[in-house]
Length: 336
Image (cartoon, rainbow, N blue to C red):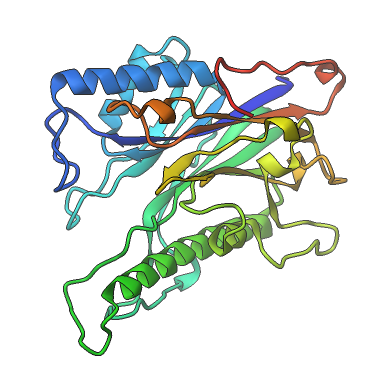
């Protein structure tokens, strides 16, 4: 059985086919711009050299196939994803998953919030009953005896959710719009946490959740996904742990990780969360997160074809004799 597993999350920033109108205020890619973008993404995937990669902001799975065709390490990888609903009022980017490990049957996408969950937004008549962007769930076969449940997510952004209904009784429309976005992100988080809890009720299994949370690890929505306030029940810990914080080889002197820059603020809003099976402090651990790396050098140069997010790579070492003595293999230019 493979002893080191590498999981990564990557918001590629608006991957769409040339000529495709993906946002009303964005000019579609030309053929040259498209080629530059998919070539850059392909280089980043090869640089990651991860076994399983979750991706966000995919407007076209056909474009992602073009990316994979340009890679050296993922041409034969499993590709799981879905295009945005063309009948929707506006296109919303979806997520995808690439795996060099086998993927078990039963890949699921969750569009509707589970357990009949519905939340009302200020100034909106109809309750929200669906995720902002569908959640992808796949089971990765590490060995005949080890399945890892992987969830790929992209929670609601902090962009204000403006509506056309101006209300003189509520003059601070920007504040109301920001509150809507916060509630939507919290709703996404609550829905995802419910999916995780439902899974654990059926059968305890190792879980990895990765994606763009649009919030830092300490934020309430992220903490909701992780299981804020939950504690081990009957010896079972239902919480998730932020991989960066529990890595066994963390070097405080090189603590410069970030995945996004907004108004001059450097933030980490892309996360890889793991269940207790990969927490070195847990008695139930079958492995441990040994190292988390952030590939973010490209954000300094702000090239048009590059993403505005950094990439996150987590190395997990499964317990076993063959895993002893393994050393890190940093991608070039990675920041830890």
